[in-house]
Amino acid sequence: MKKVTVRFSALAVLLSFSFLSFGAHSASANTLVSTSPISGSTVSVSPTNVTITGELPLLADAVDANVITVKDPNGDRVDDGTISISDLSASVGLKTLVVTGMYKVTYSLLSDGDVPLEGNFSFKYLAPSNIAPIEPSPEPTQEQSPASSSWATNIFVILLLVGAVIVTIGLSLYARKLFSER
Image (cartoon, rainbow, N blue to C red; front, side, top):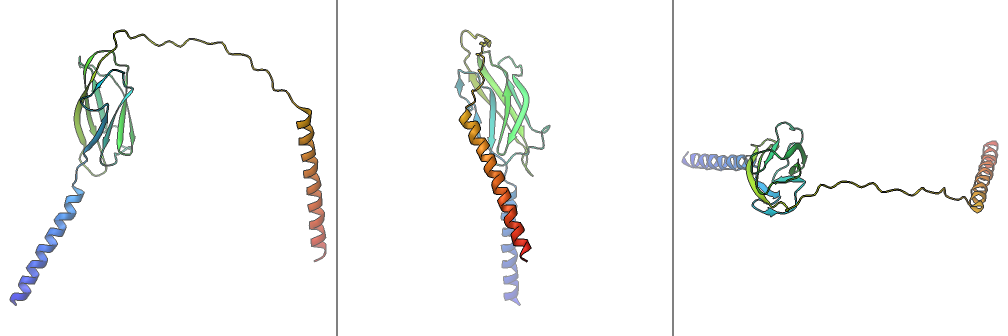
């Protein structure tokens, strides 16, 4: 009787550890893998977007639940609010940065069956001394001359068509001969 109790308690302990180990895997939280611009970096060219990459796939369907905001040193938002999700990464478009200083990125991103990936980071932007707006300048286009047609090409195409008609007639006569012999 004592051996049965010891075996039963050993089995119960083993089962409880196995259930605990299965639960630990499903409770793993999504963690930050990388950011672009890199957290704490200094950039001198205005980035067009901010990208955040996590360890687990993000929910692309939860458009309203995923949030990324970017604020300039004055506290004004400089992101355009359009978030795009691509598997492990989420990015938001940026307006052209003009103020030198620290920009703060705050994010909350959802992955399937997990707590949100939340946090913030900052990067420093060094604006050039003179920002000239880029204006497109119209360039005249040259008028395209029509492609010249070669008689040799025309004759070749006509011969191909005549050959196709001859092959079609020959195949139909051959098929008629086969079916009439049956």
